[in-house]
Amino acid sequence: MARPKDVVPVGDAPLKAAVSKGWPLLGDMVVASYITHLFGTQKKLADETLAGYDVMRRELEGPDPTPLERLAIERIVVCHATLHRVETLMAFSTKEMSINEVDSYQDRISRLQTRYLQAVRALAQIRKLDLPNVQINIAEKQVNVAGPG
Image (tube, rainbow, N blue to C red; front, side, top):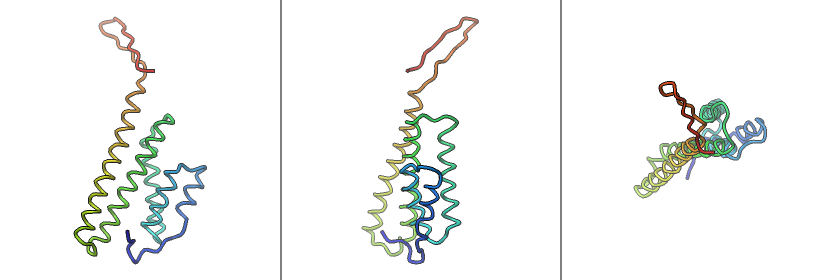
């Protein structure tokens, strides 16, 4: 998979940024590596993209994520970054590709979309399993319904 010829790597700046936040999740390191590969010397764009993934992670986590939710969210972010990395690389290289190479990229993108959606479903299932206890008042008669756990 070739990177566009005019993109030169910046080194490990995005990776250092991920590490500077504390002991990074492996997903942070993977996403930082992809961003370094895609944006090369365009540091501002790389930093903005990393910040966008931080926002995505925080939005998905909400106020008090469980450890299992954090793992699922990490998987979602990595799958999202991987999918968009391959789509971007394909967009840069389509003119130079043969029909077989384009088909290969399309197959890869389809598999990555499947993984991404599986990660999103996994998070939804995790959250569905962790239902809180619910109190329902029906015509002044209290009914307590306990969720799993």
